[in-house]
Length: 369
Ligand code: SF4
Image (cartoon, rainbow, N blue to C red):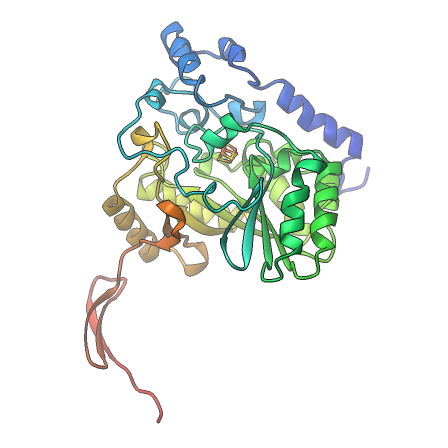
């Protein structure tokens, strides 16, 4: 048997593995009945699932410690009655995707890049999702016809350099659909980079098959932005998935969301960032402050707490392990860094700056004529 069989299983076996993982997971609200929940918890989960679909592959379910009601994996995927408690100020479309959508399935907020939504379905439905309203209201999967207006728009706008596949989860699509989308985008000469935002490597790592990575090979630089929120999500299976993507030549980045009760301590974040970089080869890219998605007040933290965590990460971790703490602003204002500021003051060309040890030091600018 060749030594790389584990990395490169036969295509049929590779597909059978992830399909079995999906089938054995939670696919419908009724499947919640098979989970070790109390009858009160099950009733509450079923009520909450009315607002946002429920789906969890078996590989992710298996990470849950059912003896811990506050388990951070469970908190991300099992519906909670708190989701039904909406607050004033929460929004259906927290970052104004729809306002900046000139054609269906596309958002164009920044000149050089667009979001493209090939599907509004996911391999896992995360309770904190800021696009849950779209996933519920639109909910449709991929068809070639549905993407035509968006692809024509990209073709007609030479300023677009990056296409970001998001959703829904693009990697929940079949290889054939991915190859088709890749080929259409690759044929637009001004597009240089294809970025894919996905939870699949976290929740359904068996889906990262040789067939999937082969569907994304060609002229375009490919960046995969994963979405790990806790070091317990990093397993031998996610290691294999990330290694397969690295060997395929993809750039791997991760964005996490800061979630109360999941990862809002320095110990959890530090371990997550280190393991992402050192074990998976995935660069921690963004740590998102929770946006104003409806029914998520119970998972949101205060910005001051996030800043303190970001400062502690900055002091403890190397630059390559450090994510940027950001907030994706309402009304389409874009992602802005909201981490701690190290500038204490300025007098002309003399600056006072706080070091990672907390001491304030001076820096006077010296430049040539
Ligand atoms: S996979 Fe992404 S789009 Fe889908 S529910 Fe989770 S966060 Fe939302």
